[in-house]
Image 1 (tube, rainbow, N blue to C red):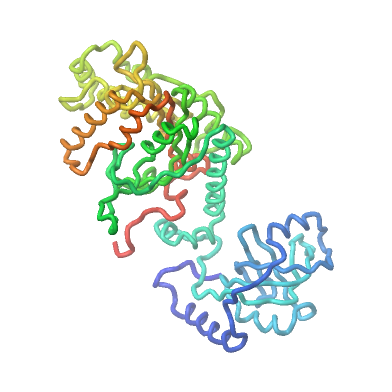
Image 2: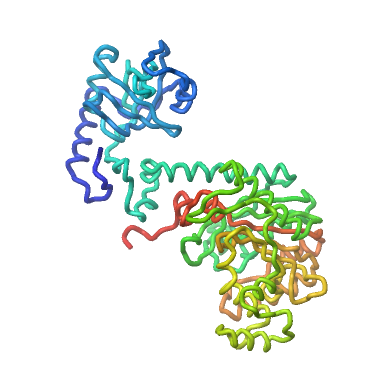
Length: 498
Protein backbone atom coordinates (compact mmCIF):
# COMPACT_ATOMS: atom_id res chain seq x y z
CA UNK A 1 0.00 0.00 0.00
CA UNK A 2 1.19 3.52 -0.72
CA UNK A 3 2.87 5.68 1.88
CA UNK A 4 0.54 7.86 3.98
CA UNK A 5 1.66 11.13 2.38
CA UNK A 6 -0.07 13.23 -0.22
CA UNK A 7 1.77 16.55 -0.27
CA UNK A 8 5.08 17.54 -1.87
CA UNK A 9 6.98 15.48 0.75
CA UNK A 10 5.89 12.31 -1.06
CA UNK A 11 8.78 10.38 -2.59
CA UNK A 12 9.36 11.58 -6.13
CA UNK A 13 10.10 7.96 -7.14
CA UNK A 14 6.50 6.92 -6.49
CA UNK A 15 5.02 9.46 -8.88
CA UNK A 16 7.82 9.02 -11.40
CA UNK A 17 7.17 5.28 -11.60
CA UNK A 18 3.50 5.93 -12.31
CA UNK A 19 4.38 8.48 -14.99
CA UNK A 20 6.70 5.95 -16.63
CA UNK A 21 3.96 3.32 -16.55
CA UNK A 22 1.54 5.77 -18.14
CA UNK A 23 4.00 6.39 -20.96
CA UNK A 24 4.43 2.65 -21.54
CA UNK A 25 0.67 2.08 -21.43
CA UNK A 26 0.10 4.78 -24.05
CA UNK A 27 2.64 3.02 -26.28
CA UNK A 28 1.20 -0.45 -25.69
CA UNK A 29 -2.59 0.01 -25.56
CA UNK A 30 -3.17 3.55 -26.78
CA UNK A 31 -6.02 5.21 -24.91
CA UNK A 32 -5.46 4.90 -21.16
CA UNK A 33 -8.47 7.11 -20.37
CA UNK A 34 -11.25 5.71 -22.60
CA UNK A 35 -14.49 7.64 -22.90
CA UNK A 36 -16.72 4.59 -22.89
CA UNK A 37 -17.00 1.50 -20.72
CA UNK A 38 -20.13 -0.53 -20.04
CA UNK A 39 -20.44 -2.44 -16.78
CA UNK A 40 -23.28 -4.88 -16.32
CA UNK A 41 -23.72 -4.25 -12.60
CA UNK A 42 -22.34 -2.35 -9.63
CA UNK A 43 -20.52 -4.06 -6.78
CA UNK A 44 -23.53 -3.55 -4.53
CA UNK A 45 -25.84 -5.14 -7.11
CA UNK A 46 -23.40 -8.02 -7.49
CA UNK A 47 -23.25 -8.59 -3.72
CA UNK A 48 -27.04 -8.54 -3.47
CA UNK A 49 -27.58 -10.92 -6.39
CA UNK A 50 -25.08 -13.50 -5.13
CA UNK A 51 -25.67 -13.10 -1.40
CA UNK A 52 -26.76 -16.74 -1.11
CA UNK A 53 -23.89 -18.20 -3.11
CA UNK A 54 -22.17 -20.92 -1.05
CA UNK A 55 -18.41 -20.95 -0.37
CA UNK A 56 -16.25 -22.79 -2.92
CA UNK A 57 -18.94 -22.49 -5.59
CA UNK A 58 -18.29 -21.13 -9.09
CA UNK A 59 -21.14 -19.94 -11.30
CA UNK A 60 -21.17 -19.76 -15.06
CA UNK A 61 -22.36 -16.14 -14.90
CA UNK A 62 -20.17 -13.64 -16.71
CA UNK A 63 -20.32 -10.06 -15.42
CA UNK A 64 -18.51 -6.81 -16.09
CA UNK A 65 -17.65 -4.48 -13.20
CA UNK A 66 -15.46 -1.44 -12.67
CA UNK A 67 -13.80 0.30 -9.75
CA UNK A 68 -10.70 1.75 -8.14
CA UNK A 69 -7.96 -0.65 -7.03
CA UNK A 70 -7.58 -0.48 -3.26
CA UNK A 71 -5.28 -3.45 -2.68
CA UNK A 72 -3.13 -5.81 -4.69
CA UNK A 73 -1.57 -9.09 -3.54
CA UNK A 74 0.68 -11.74 -5.06
CA UNK A 75 1.82 -9.49 -7.92
CA UNK A 76 -1.76 -8.61 -8.82
CA UNK A 77 -3.17 -12.12 -8.71
CA UNK A 78 -5.65 -10.83 -6.09
CA UNK A 79 -6.98 -7.29 -6.23
CA UNK A 80 -9.81 -5.53 -4.41
CA UNK A 81 -11.65 -2.92 -6.44
CA UNK A 82 -14.14 -0.46 -4.93
CA UNK A 83 -16.98 1.52 -6.45
CA UNK A 84 -19.46 3.77 -4.64
CA UNK A 85 -21.42 0.74 -3.39
CA UNK A 86 -18.70 -1.56 -2.07
CA UNK A 87 -15.81 -3.81 -3.02
CA UNK A 88 -15.27 -6.98 -5.03
CA UNK A 89 -12.23 -9.25 -5.17
CA UNK A 90 -10.60 -9.88 -8.56
CA UNK A 91 -8.65 -13.09 -9.20
CA UNK A 92 -6.28 -13.36 -12.16
CA UNK A 93 -4.69 -16.66 -13.15
CA UNK A 94 -3.26 -18.16 -16.32
CA UNK A 95 -6.03 -20.80 -16.33
CA UNK A 96 -8.81 -18.20 -16.59
CA UNK A 97 -7.26 -14.83 -17.49
CA UNK A 98 -6.15 -13.87 -20.98
CA UNK A 99 -2.46 -13.31 -21.62
CA UNK A 100 -3.18 -9.72 -22.61
CA UNK A 101 -4.91 -9.07 -19.27
CA UNK A 102 -2.11 -10.72 -17.27
CA UNK A 103 0.44 -8.58 -19.09
CA UNK A 104 -1.42 -5.53 -17.80
CA UNK A 105 -1.12 -6.53 -14.12
CA UNK A 106 2.42 -5.14 -13.51
CA UNK A 107 1.23 -1.79 -14.86
CA UNK A 108 -1.66 -1.51 -12.39
CA UNK A 109 -1.07 0.53 -9.24
CA UNK A 110 -3.16 1.15 -6.14
CA UNK A 111 -5.60 3.93 -7.07
CA UNK A 112 -5.98 3.01 -10.73
CA UNK A 113 -9.50 2.50 -12.06
CA UNK A 114 -10.00 -0.70 -14.05
CA UNK A 115 -12.79 -2.63 -15.70
CA UNK A 116 -13.03 -6.41 -15.28
CA UNK A 117 -15.05 -9.04 -17.10
CA UNK A 118 -15.20 -12.56 -15.69
CA UNK A 119 -17.03 -15.39 -13.92
CA UNK A 120 -18.57 -14.97 -10.46
CA UNK A 121 -17.56 -17.37 -7.68
CA UNK A 122 -17.23 -17.47 -3.93
CA UNK A 123 -13.93 -18.64 -2.46
CA UNK A 124 -13.52 -21.28 0.23
CA UNK A 125 -13.11 -18.40 2.72
CA UNK A 126 -16.43 -16.92 1.63
CA UNK A 127 -15.07 -13.99 -0.42
CA UNK A 128 -17.22 -13.04 -3.41
CA UNK A 129 -14.79 -13.01 -6.32
CA UNK A 130 -14.60 -12.54 -10.07
CA UNK A 131 -12.29 -14.84 -12.01
CA UNK A 132 -10.99 -12.27 -14.46
CA UNK A 133 -11.07 -13.07 -18.15
CA UNK A 134 -10.48 -9.55 -19.40
CA UNK A 135 -9.02 -6.46 -17.66
CA UNK A 136 -9.10 -2.93 -19.07
CA UNK A 137 -7.30 0.18 -17.86
CA UNK A 138 -9.91 2.95 -17.49
CA UNK A 139 -7.95 5.60 -15.55
CA UNK A 140 -4.28 5.64 -14.62
CA UNK A 141 -3.76 7.40 -11.28
CA UNK A 142 -0.62 9.53 -11.19
CA UNK A 143 -0.63 10.05 -7.42
CA UNK A 144 -0.42 7.37 -4.70
CA UNK A 145 -3.41 6.99 -2.38
CA UNK A 146 -3.16 7.54 1.39
CA UNK A 147 -2.66 4.32 3.30
CA UNK A 148 -6.10 2.69 3.49
CA UNK A 149 -6.12 1.70 7.14
CA UNK A 150 -5.13 5.11 8.48
CA UNK A 151 -6.41 7.48 5.81
CA UNK A 152 -5.53 11.15 6.18
CA UNK A 153 -4.29 11.84 9.69
CA UNK A 154 -3.97 15.60 9.05
CA UNK A 155 -7.43 17.04 9.77
CA UNK A 156 -6.91 20.16 7.66
CA UNK A 157 -5.75 17.99 4.77
CA UNK A 158 -8.96 15.96 5.08
CA UNK A 159 -11.00 19.10 4.39
CA UNK A 160 -8.66 20.41 1.68
CA UNK A 161 -8.50 17.07 -0.15
CA UNK A 162 -11.99 15.79 0.57
CA UNK A 163 -11.79 13.36 -2.35
CA UNK A 164 -8.99 11.51 -0.54
CA UNK A 165 -10.80 11.67 2.78
CA UNK A 166 -13.88 9.97 1.33
CA UNK A 167 -11.75 7.58 -0.72
CA UNK A 168 -9.99 6.23 2.39
CA UNK A 169 -12.45 6.88 5.23
CA UNK A 170 -15.67 4.86 5.30
CA UNK A 171 -17.04 7.05 8.10
CA UNK A 172 -16.74 10.18 5.95
CA UNK A 173 -18.23 8.41 2.96
CA UNK A 174 -21.21 7.19 5.00
CA UNK A 175 -21.71 10.63 6.54
CA UNK A 176 -22.13 12.31 3.15
CA UNK A 177 -24.41 9.56 1.95
CA UNK A 178 -26.50 10.19 5.08
CA UNK A 179 -26.45 13.93 4.43
CA UNK A 180 -28.02 13.32 1.04
CA UNK A 181 -30.62 11.07 2.65
CA UNK A 182 -31.44 13.68 5.32
CA UNK A 183 -31.91 16.45 2.74
CA UNK A 184 -34.15 14.16 0.70
CA UNK A 185 -36.01 13.27 3.89
CA UNK A 186 -36.65 16.93 4.75
CA UNK A 187 -37.94 17.63 1.25
CA UNK A 188 -40.18 14.54 1.23
CA UNK A 189 -41.55 15.30 4.71
CA UNK A 190 -42.39 18.89 3.85
CA UNK A 191 -44.04 17.95 0.57
CA UNK A 192 -46.04 15.17 2.23
CA UNK A 193 -47.19 17.74 4.80
CA UNK A 194 -48.59 19.93 2.02
CA UNK A 195 -45.74 22.44 1.67
CA UNK A 196 -44.75 23.69 -1.76
CA UNK A 197 -41.05 24.11 -2.52
CA UNK A 198 -39.93 27.32 -4.24
CA UNK A 199 -36.63 28.89 -5.19
CA UNK A 200 -35.87 32.49 -4.25
CA UNK A 201 -32.95 34.69 -5.38
CA UNK A 202 -29.46 34.24 -4.01
CA UNK A 203 -28.41 37.67 -5.26
CA UNK A 204 -30.17 40.50 -3.41
CA UNK A 205 -30.03 44.20 -4.16
CA UNK A 206 -31.15 44.84 -0.56
CA UNK A 207 -30.02 42.38 2.08
CA UNK A 208 -32.31 41.42 4.94
CA UNK A 209 -34.30 38.74 6.69
CA UNK A 210 -31.65 38.37 9.40
CA UNK A 211 -29.08 40.45 11.20
CA UNK A 212 -25.73 39.48 9.70
CA UNK A 213 -22.82 40.89 7.72
CA UNK A 214 -23.33 40.11 4.02
CA UNK A 215 -20.93 39.18 1.24
CA UNK A 216 -20.89 41.91 -1.39
CA UNK A 217 -20.55 41.54 -5.15
CA UNK A 218 -21.26 43.66 -8.24
CA UNK A 219 -23.41 43.12 -11.33
CA UNK A 220 -21.52 44.59 -14.28
CA UNK A 221 -24.41 44.91 -16.73
CA UNK A 222 -26.84 46.44 -14.24
CA UNK A 223 -24.02 48.47 -12.66
CA UNK A 224 -25.46 47.45 -9.32
CA UNK A 225 -23.89 46.37 -6.05
CA UNK A 226 -25.53 43.16 -4.85
CA UNK A 227 -25.32 40.87 -1.83
CA UNK A 228 -25.30 37.13 -1.41
CA UNK A 229 -28.41 35.99 0.44
CA UNK A 230 -28.22 35.98 4.24
CA UNK A 231 -31.80 34.64 4.52
CA UNK A 232 -34.73 33.92 2.17
CA UNK A 233 -37.36 35.19 4.65
CA UNK A 234 -38.59 38.32 2.90
CA UNK A 235 -39.05 36.60 -0.48
CA UNK A 236 -40.81 33.62 1.07
CA UNK A 237 -43.23 35.95 2.87
CA UNK A 238 -43.94 37.70 -0.43
CA UNK A 239 -44.78 34.27 -1.86
CA UNK A 240 -47.27 33.81 0.98
CA UNK A 241 -48.82 37.21 0.16
CA UNK A 242 -49.26 36.13 -3.46
CA UNK A 243 -51.62 33.29 -2.60
CA UNK A 244 -49.55 30.83 -4.63
CA UNK A 245 -49.69 28.45 -1.67
CA UNK A 246 -50.57 28.52 2.02
CA UNK A 247 -47.53 26.40 2.93
CA UNK A 248 -44.20 27.31 1.36
CA UNK A 249 -40.64 26.13 1.99
CA UNK A 250 -37.15 26.38 0.59
CA UNK A 251 -33.97 24.41 1.24
CA UNK A 252 -31.43 27.13 0.62
CA UNK A 253 -27.80 28.13 0.80
CA UNK A 254 -27.16 31.27 2.85
CA UNK A 255 -23.98 33.33 3.13
CA UNK A 256 -22.87 35.32 6.15
CA UNK A 257 -19.57 37.17 6.27
CA UNK A 258 -18.86 36.25 9.85
CA UNK A 259 -16.76 33.92 11.99
CA UNK A 260 -15.81 30.29 11.43
CA UNK A 261 -16.08 27.66 14.16
CA UNK A 262 -17.03 24.03 14.69
CA UNK A 263 -20.67 25.18 14.34
CA UNK A 264 -20.34 28.05 11.85
CA UNK A 265 -19.40 28.15 8.16
CA UNK A 266 -19.66 31.26 5.95
CA UNK A 267 -22.04 29.41 3.62
CA UNK A 268 -24.53 27.01 5.12
CA UNK A 269 -27.82 25.26 4.41
CA UNK A 270 -31.16 26.17 5.94
CA UNK A 271 -34.69 24.94 5.55
CA UNK A 272 -37.06 27.87 5.91
CA UNK A 273 -40.85 27.61 5.74
CA UNK A 274 -44.00 29.70 6.26
CA UNK A 275 -47.44 28.33 7.03
CA UNK A 276 -50.51 30.54 6.61
CA UNK A 277 -53.13 30.45 9.36
CA UNK A 278 -50.75 28.65 11.71
CA UNK A 279 -48.83 29.94 14.72
CA UNK A 280 -45.61 29.11 16.56
CA UNK A 281 -47.21 26.23 18.45
CA UNK A 282 -48.20 24.58 15.17
CA UNK A 283 -44.59 25.03 14.07
CA UNK A 284 -43.33 23.35 17.26
CA UNK A 285 -45.41 20.30 16.41
CA UNK A 286 -44.03 20.38 12.86
CA UNK A 287 -40.43 20.44 14.10
CA UNK A 288 -41.02 17.47 16.39
CA UNK A 289 -42.60 15.42 13.63
CA UNK A 290 -39.80 16.32 11.21
CA UNK A 291 -36.99 15.47 13.64
CA UNK A 292 -38.60 12.18 14.61
CA UNK A 293 -39.03 11.26 10.93
CA UNK A 294 -35.37 11.98 10.14
CA UNK A 295 -34.07 9.99 13.12
CA UNK A 296 -36.14 6.98 12.08
CA UNK A 297 -34.90 7.32 8.50
CA UNK A 298 -31.21 7.38 9.47
CA UNK A 299 -31.12 5.19 12.58
CA UNK A 300 -34.34 3.19 12.52
CA UNK A 301 -35.07 4.56 15.99
CA UNK A 302 -35.60 7.95 17.61
CA UNK A 303 -32.67 7.35 20.00
CA UNK A 304 -29.11 7.58 18.71
CA UNK A 305 -25.58 8.35 19.96
CA UNK A 306 -23.83 11.67 19.75
CA UNK A 307 -20.37 11.63 21.29
CA UNK A 308 -20.77 10.21 24.78
CA UNK A 309 -24.49 11.07 24.92
CA UNK A 310 -27.66 9.37 23.75
CA UNK A 311 -30.12 11.80 22.18
CA UNK A 312 -33.82 11.19 21.71
CA UNK A 313 -35.82 12.79 18.92
CA UNK A 314 -39.05 11.29 20.19
CA UNK A 315 -41.69 13.99 20.67
CA UNK A 316 -43.06 15.84 22.45
CA UNK A 317 -39.96 17.86 23.29
CA UNK A 318 -39.61 19.86 26.49
CA UNK A 319 -41.20 23.32 26.16
CA UNK A 320 -40.14 26.08 28.53
CA UNK A 321 -40.56 29.90 28.43
CA UNK A 322 -37.23 31.73 28.54
CA UNK A 323 -38.00 33.62 31.81
CA UNK A 324 -38.92 30.32 33.49
CA UNK A 325 -35.76 28.62 32.21
CA UNK A 326 -33.58 31.43 33.56
CA UNK A 327 -35.36 31.39 36.92
CA UNK A 328 -34.97 27.62 37.18
CA UNK A 329 -31.20 27.73 36.56
CA UNK A 330 -30.22 31.02 38.24
CA UNK A 331 -33.08 31.89 40.59
CA UNK A 332 -33.52 35.30 38.92
CA UNK A 333 -37.20 36.11 38.33
CA UNK A 334 -37.30 38.53 35.42
CA UNK A 335 -41.09 38.53 35.23
CA UNK A 336 -41.18 40.12 38.69
CA UNK A 337 -39.15 43.09 37.45
CA UNK A 338 -40.83 46.15 35.98
CA UNK A 339 -37.97 48.25 34.60
CA UNK A 340 -34.73 47.97 32.68
CA UNK A 341 -32.88 49.33 35.71
CA UNK A 342 -34.19 46.51 37.89
CA UNK A 343 -33.08 43.93 35.32
CA UNK A 344 -29.57 45.36 35.06
CA UNK A 345 -29.24 45.59 38.84
CA UNK A 346 -30.40 41.99 39.31
CA UNK A 347 -27.97 40.76 36.67
CA UNK A 348 -25.06 42.62 38.25
CA UNK A 349 -26.00 41.37 41.72
CA UNK A 350 -25.81 37.81 40.33
CA UNK A 351 -22.30 38.46 39.01
CA UNK A 352 -23.06 39.19 35.35
CA UNK A 353 -21.43 42.03 33.47
CA UNK A 354 -24.07 43.91 31.47
CA UNK A 355 -23.93 47.11 29.46
CA UNK A 356 -25.33 50.28 31.00
CA UNK A 357 -27.95 50.74 28.25
CA UNK A 358 -29.19 47.16 28.10
CA UNK A 359 -32.93 46.62 28.27
CA UNK A 360 -34.88 44.14 30.38
CA UNK A 361 -35.07 41.76 27.45
CA UNK A 362 -31.40 42.04 26.56
CA UNK A 363 -30.42 41.19 30.13
CA UNK A 364 -32.77 38.19 30.13
CA UNK A 365 -31.43 36.89 26.80
CA UNK A 366 -27.81 37.38 27.85
CA UNK A 367 -28.18 35.38 31.06
CA UNK A 368 -30.06 32.68 29.16
CA UNK A 369 -27.16 32.36 26.71
CA UNK A 370 -24.58 32.37 29.50
CA UNK A 371 -26.23 29.91 31.90
CA UNK A 372 -29.15 28.05 30.35
CA UNK A 373 -28.16 27.07 26.81
CA UNK A 374 -25.45 24.72 28.08
CA UNK A 375 -28.05 22.72 30.04
CA UNK A 376 -30.26 21.98 27.01
CA UNK A 377 -28.91 18.60 25.94
CA UNK A 378 -32.08 16.78 24.91
CA UNK A 379 -34.27 18.50 22.28
CA UNK A 380 -36.10 21.44 23.87
CA UNK A 381 -38.21 24.34 22.66
CA UNK A 382 -37.42 27.60 24.48
CA UNK A 383 -40.44 29.88 24.04
CA UNK A 384 -41.55 33.42 24.93
CA UNK A 385 -38.48 35.40 23.87
CA UNK A 386 -38.12 39.07 24.82
CA UNK A 387 -39.64 41.47 22.32
CA UNK A 388 -36.45 43.56 22.59
CA UNK A 389 -34.52 40.96 20.59
CA UNK A 390 -37.43 39.65 18.47
CA UNK A 391 -38.79 42.62 16.53
CA UNK A 392 -40.73 40.61 13.93
CA UNK A 393 -42.81 38.28 16.09
CA UNK A 394 -46.31 38.67 17.54
CA UNK A 395 -46.64 39.67 21.19
CA UNK A 396 -47.70 37.12 23.79
CA UNK A 397 -51.27 38.05 24.82
CA UNK A 398 -51.19 39.74 28.21
CA UNK A 399 -47.38 40.07 28.30
CA UNK A 400 -46.21 42.72 25.79
CA UNK A 401 -42.56 42.29 26.78
CA UNK A 402 -42.56 38.76 25.34
CA UNK A 403 -43.33 37.41 21.88
CA UNK A 404 -44.57 34.18 20.34
CA UNK A 405 -41.17 32.91 19.33
CA UNK A 406 -39.27 29.74 20.07
CA UNK A 407 -35.85 28.31 19.39
CA UNK A 408 -35.17 24.59 19.34
CA UNK A 409 -32.04 23.45 21.17
CA UNK A 410 -30.21 20.13 21.34
CA UNK A 411 -26.72 19.36 22.65
CA UNK A 412 -26.72 23.02 23.81
CA UNK A 413 -26.94 24.13 20.14
CA UNK A 414 -29.61 26.24 18.54
CA UNK A 415 -31.11 24.23 15.68
CA UNK A 416 -34.17 26.24 14.72
CA UNK A 417 -35.85 29.61 15.16
CA UNK A 418 -39.58 30.23 14.70
CA UNK A 419 -42.20 32.98 15.13
CA UNK A 420 -45.83 33.70 14.99
CA UNK A 421 -45.04 36.14 12.21
CA UNK A 422 -45.74 39.86 12.35
CA UNK A 423 -48.16 40.82 9.56
CA UNK A 424 -49.38 44.28 10.68
CA UNK A 425 -47.98 46.47 7.85
CA UNK A 426 -47.73 49.66 9.91
CA UNK A 427 -46.02 47.89 12.81
CA UNK A 428 -43.77 46.02 10.37
CA UNK A 429 -42.62 49.29 8.79
CA UNK A 430 -42.09 50.95 12.18
CA UNK A 431 -39.92 48.07 13.41
CA UNK A 432 -37.91 47.83 10.18
CA UNK A 433 -37.23 51.57 10.22
CA UNK A 434 -36.11 51.29 13.83
CA UNK A 435 -33.85 48.36 12.95
CA UNK A 436 -32.41 50.33 10.03
CA UNK A 437 -31.62 53.31 12.24
CA UNK A 438 -29.83 51.01 14.68
CA UNK A 439 -27.81 49.49 11.82
CA UNK A 440 -26.79 52.93 10.55
CA UNK A 441 -25.78 53.92 14.08
CA UNK A 442 -23.49 50.87 14.12
CA UNK A 443 -21.88 52.08 10.89
CA UNK A 444 -23.74 49.77 8.48
CA UNK A 445 -24.35 52.52 5.91
CA UNK A 446 -25.16 50.06 3.09
CA UNK A 447 -28.19 48.74 4.95
CA UNK A 448 -31.43 49.84 3.23
CA UNK A 449 -35.14 49.54 3.77
CA UNK A 450 -36.69 46.80 1.63
CA UNK A 451 -39.55 48.79 0.14
CA UNK A 452 -40.60 45.97 -2.19
CA UNK A 453 -41.15 43.70 0.81
CA UNK A 454 -43.05 46.40 2.69
CA UNK A 455 -45.20 47.02 -0.39
CA UNK A 456 -46.09 43.31 -0.41
CA UNK A 457 -46.99 43.38 3.29
CA UNK A 458 -49.20 46.41 2.62
CA UNK A 459 -51.08 44.16 0.21
CA UNK A 460 -51.86 41.88 3.13
CA UNK A 461 -50.08 38.79 4.45
CA UNK A 462 -52.22 36.20 6.27
CA UNK A 463 -51.37 35.30 9.86
CA UNK A 464 -48.63 32.71 9.68
CA UNK A 465 -46.03 30.68 11.51
CA UNK A 466 -42.47 30.80 10.18
CA UNK A 467 -39.45 28.57 10.80
CA UNK A 468 -35.77 28.39 9.93
CA UNK A 469 -33.74 25.24 10.66
CA UNK A 470 -29.95 25.04 10.50
CA UNK A 471 -29.66 21.91 8.38
CA UNK A 472 -25.90 21.46 8.81
CA UNK A 473 -26.13 21.38 12.61
CA UNK A 474 -29.04 18.97 12.41
CA UNK A 475 -26.96 16.71 10.17
CA UNK A 476 -24.07 16.95 12.65
CA UNK A 477 -26.31 15.53 15.37
CA UNK A 478 -27.82 12.81 13.22
CA UNK A 479 -24.42 11.63 11.91
CA UNK A 480 -22.39 12.06 15.11
CA UNK A 481 -20.09 14.69 13.59
CA UNK A 482 -18.04 16.89 15.97
CA UNK A 483 -17.54 19.75 13.49
CA UNK A 484 -19.68 21.43 10.84
CA UNK A 485 -16.76 20.93 8.44
CA UNK A 486 -17.33 17.18 8.74
CA UNK A 487 -20.78 17.50 7.14
CA UNK A 488 -20.05 20.14 4.48
CA UNK A 489 -18.46 18.46 1.49
CA UNK A 490 -16.09 21.34 0.72
CA UNK A 491 -16.03 23.70 3.74
CA UNK A 492 -14.57 27.20 3.75
CA UNK A 493 -10.88 27.23 4.61
CA UNK A 494 -7.86 29.45 4.39
CA UNK A 495 -5.78 29.33 1.25
CA UNK A 496 -2.91 26.86 1.20
CA UNK A 497 -0.41 29.73 1.29
CA UNK A 498 -1.80 30.83 4.67
